Image 1 (tube, helix red, strand yellow):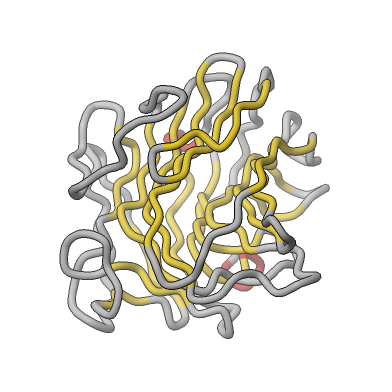
Image 2 (tube, rainbow, N blue to C red):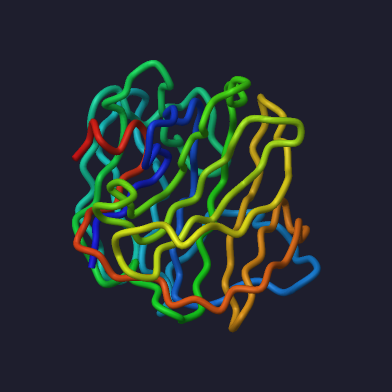
Length: 239
């Protein structure tokens, strides 16, 4: 099992600059292709919900509550806080600051983010204050990945470019990257998007606001590693 990293870089990239709301991990394929109705209200927990962060609270707060059926303790570090400046649902969202490498949320090792070869969905609301600068290796929004050649399981990263390229990196041996599946999609700043990454059987798909961006073949057994989950900021700074 391993720690999960959300909104952070698992390698020498840059931390995410913006807000995230309604962060959820599920052990089922929640959405249908080619489209679905994007959420119009905050999620409710069900038997398939393994992590659910509404990111509600007061402006500048540092309490993040997991509203899943088996709640995990979430620790805020650096400047990460609940912000009322931007929110999709509820009272606030999670603010991550790109200038602070120590920003982030960490959650202890759990079997709930050991995916193996099973179906899963990772979805969230996201608001970019800025897009990745040209030449940047990318901002990782969620990951369970210390560094390639040391501990590796999976990570979601967006890279600069036109269009931006979104990768789902994975390891099959728990040490080395086995590659990535990816999709091209550029987000505008200053607005929320619902984004979902979903595995169903032998395929992986990315969705934005209810529309499927693309479907890739994915037949791999994702490795189980002993590393926490992190959301926001450099992973290495939070370890």
